[in-house]
Image (cartoon, rainbow, N blue to C red; front, side):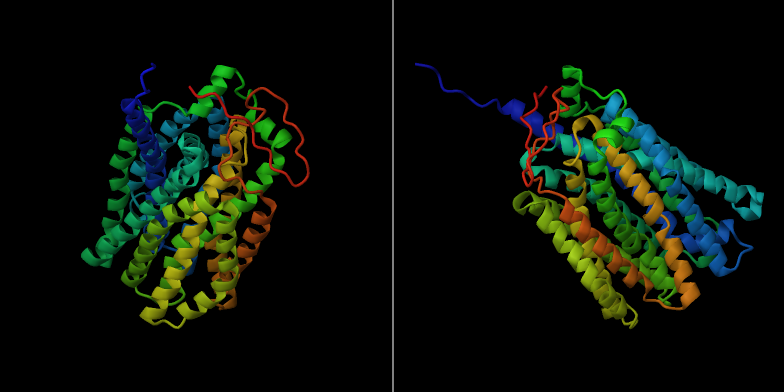
Length: 461
């Protein structure tokens, strides 16, 4: 009689540890990145006074957001570099390089003298640090999304990928909390004089810890399978635009939907409340902190919900809500009462969280493994550069030119329409295998109209 098979509990525990480690490795980089970027955005008024003191208040703020936008414009360059590197050499290679680049550029910004000390050289060096950040950011999303998607079990991939945005929101939450503490503990002169540097310097050890963790992890099962099958793409950038251009366009639509909402709600809203609505800095920072905290809870729930009911229903819900509710929420915010401001901020944060919990897994499942990181990186970076990075600048200019403080509401409603159209073009992909026919060295068959082709399982190594 054959002895019953005993489950290898040690192997199962090792697999769970590997998944946990990969989740930390994928999310810690976005935490560091978005903490740095959120601090820069939240302290835009202070930074404009330090590096552009001779400009008027509006001109200085526009100059500061202009530097913010410049760093977005270089993201596509970083996306091409790091996307290609990740699809040819592996996800972990780019994960380690980008986090080290972010940590070093943040260190430089934290010790950078202001305009009063070194004159015009100060804003030039400020631009240089943001350019390095932008190049690294161009590779961060694609690397982390591909890494988390490929390491997560198929039936929990939405939940696994949601931790990427959990990391980004945690970065924003920590940033808004630090700004709130600065506004409470220090005077305005102290913050402008030296205390504004503290959050940037805090980022450096976090980046080094992330670098250490990322160096110690192995690559994803899917990428190692490509290496074993000898089907790693030789020219992933060309292959994206030759064979995966439909997936690329859909990803651009999805990332426009996510990125613009993300930057309006979590980056621009605090400055909008201060400058356009007259909120004091501490009140605006508290609202941002509460909104980030709510989103932090909702994001993994939205990812898990997409594993249960599908990606499309969750995303449709968010897109319709953004289209219908943006204008009423901003109208409520304009009343100026604390209760109205809290309700409107939390409402916008809730809609954003549903998008964040589902968008990454949806675009990860669009591409074959051969070109996944390249396609994700370029689409994310291009849309961020064209639409998200310029949103604070555009909205600041529109409000100043028209005097209409409802502009952000109209803008988000339009973005919601983009989301509805994009989701309508994407087929449901919950639970599909990430290894496509081209990954396995076979020609991809033309799918029958109205059907979804699910490739056979990939060999796991």
